[in-house]
Length: 260
Image (cartoon, rainbow, N blue to C red; front, side):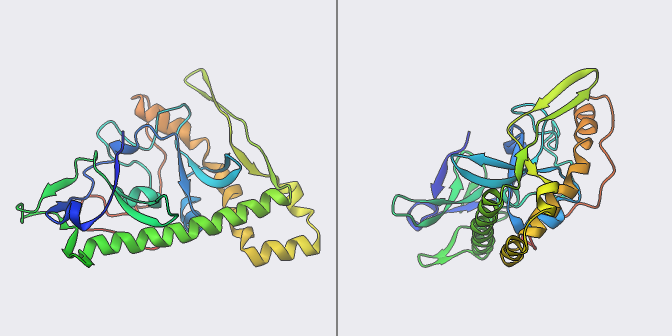
């Protein structure tokens, strides 16, 4: 359960915030939205699919084989993968759109990560003054702005892919411990149609930067079977696959808002 609250001076002037101690907040996420700029890194270890939600297309990492079960979050809240999606790195902050269509920085009031300003030994100040956010708060805001910009660009690319008829249904069925697991509602790139585009269509794809999105999704499909190993590990029946070194600082007490 989350409760995003706009970050205002009147609400948070006398508060600080801590970094997330774990990733239990994402434990029930079977998928996670991705933006185009993070796909080259995400496709190295996560299966990536496209989705359609109320006529809006986007990209997502496939994190589970059943609803409400993120295989990349351990029972202790540790992230098990080698790439941490951007929207998880910014938690407990996110960008929301208010009734006037304005982007607003929000903080999850249910996160348990807000602390009193009197605790000077830890935490980051929300504000330095009424008109100036704290240094680390400003970093989060800048990071989320870049994510939002890439999210809009990703939506445009996906709209083009849909217009060119490059999406196809991707029903996933995997056998885990003798049981069939089905994941529905996913889309993937139709490679045959991609290869048969006209010169004019190829030019539009190149101008939009859509080829990178397509090939990252296609390359990422090799990681689908890794979900079986994560499932077995989480159920105590195996080890997760070997992966690249972790790309986000998890326990050093420092923020990491590097490249998406």
